[in-house]
Length: 341
Image 1: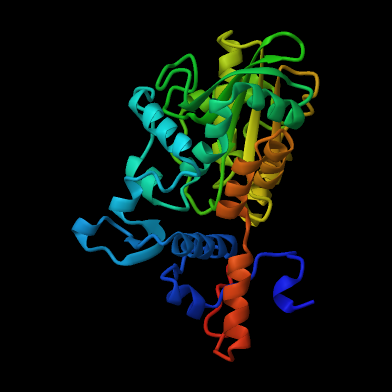
Image 2 (image 1 turned 180 degrees about the vertical axis):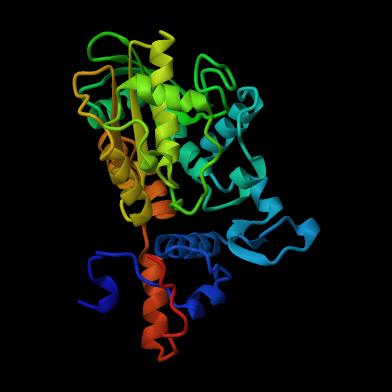
């Protein structure tokens, strides 16, 4: 068996020589983000798309391999099918007031988790029966029937009955639960995000909800408000507030993230450790790997969509080949490898 064909156990550390060659050498990237950025650049090259820029061309920003040009972005190339690209345009036209959607990033940034959200859940929005089948498989104790899929949703941005700010879910599934109730699956989607983003200001409303919810061992524990974890805390409390407002009978807060994004997986586990056992409660927490969700889609008949998603987001074989070529070619692969975890 060749080195390049060995079963993957970890994401490789990419030498900066390779990153520079494909115009994706970003010093702040984590190990996973550097590999994902290279993978997206290599995908772009395979499609024959020109390299975009850090800013738009009008500002003469430097080239960045994980970006599409403005012209290419306008064709919907960041989405896995024409149908999903058309759905995105529809959803943008009818998005909720004050919804936080950066349309340029959505269309042109290949690392955008919002684009991943549409690519994962767009096909389910377009095929409700398959959405039901997929989420019965993923959440057999919760979902009986998926009735609708909403993107970038908040029950009331700024409304004091909820969190009083603009916190929102990436996507929600409205469903009938296995107990016959009106259910909400509130979902946060991650791709390359880690824990470097600084938390935003916390209003007293969050402290009140944290105490009232009964979700946590210690509702005042500082770790809940830390980078990487705070967003889960905020959105879980937003889901809780939908129950206290009697919008739903039951809710599930659900995080979808790549299994190999180590920083994100650590943050999920840190958050889980703060939770009270709530198996019998009306609000639960769960997470699933992107890989598992894609496998569930394939198992329920969405084979083409699953293959497109694997090619875009999960298949790092092109990264392996780029690394193997520089090693086999005798070039210096030791130059400043990306050492971040």
